[in-house]
Image (cartoon, rainbow, N blue to C red):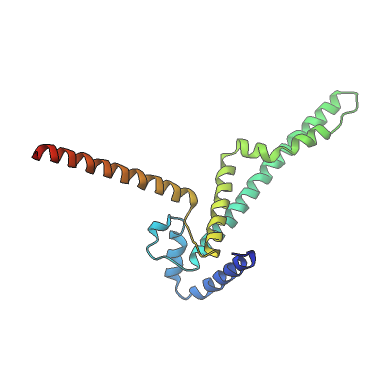
Length: 176
């Protein structure tokens, strides 16, 4: 699907969301159930799926931006104080270039020390995946929840199959 077609589908979904406001229960159900793996949707459809992804991505991006700017401000203050302290203690000329270069590593350090950064970044990713899935007519739930659900059901099916094989063997030996 072309990028223009994806944008057109998102626009159509937003227009449909405004029309769905006349049926708030359907919109609410689609909004709250859409993060679940698709197997649990039971015929769920509509623009509530799109709205949920957009709201999740938007709020997560706002939270990630706020947390990052707070962290980056603290790092910048510490670097500035360290540079001023070194300058006041030394009679030689001090360059601020090393401190600025270290400041360029702030995004890497942010993800290295902040678990909240990883959660918010994944939440942005998940919301965008769900928005793109809706726009390409292949809506899906949260990628991580869907993966865990698929693995758990695969293991459950494997255990069930093994149990059936064992019971059939025992029944065969018992009967004869």
